Length: 211
Image (cartoon, rainbow, N blue to C red):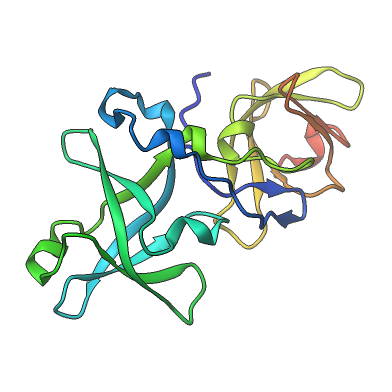
């Protein structure tokens, strides 16, 4: 079945989420963002609202990497026509609640200008996303992987990793059982091979079928 999952900047291992720094790719600064396809972009944040009267904005962070959001950092915003436009962060203020910052964008200094960015998503080029460490995977990497029994029999395909929940889980599409949810925990998942694009379970799929 076709799989359409947005690329993210958070990587996950069974039982825990990663937290490591990502290297920058200075060569991307002079590239032409409008010429790239959607698959070349990674979602790293969303502007949720304006803050105050001077053009500051609240940004919800979709990344493991704090260096994405320092003053002067280069991000890209997706416009209504589908194109990607470069922006730079100005002053950045951390929030007490994790996963959020308040920030100015360079060139945006009024409330009216800031309102035009409400709800817009922020991206980086795929080339700037760091390769996860061993045992860690980005959700879009897992989508489309083959799912196998411990004996090697194919039983389905990964639809997505539901990671915005307290206990992440894989959604598996199976011809015999429809969609099945597998907790993303080592006790249920034996191995994940990036090279072979295979997820091997520790036990038969039937044990996870509700009812």
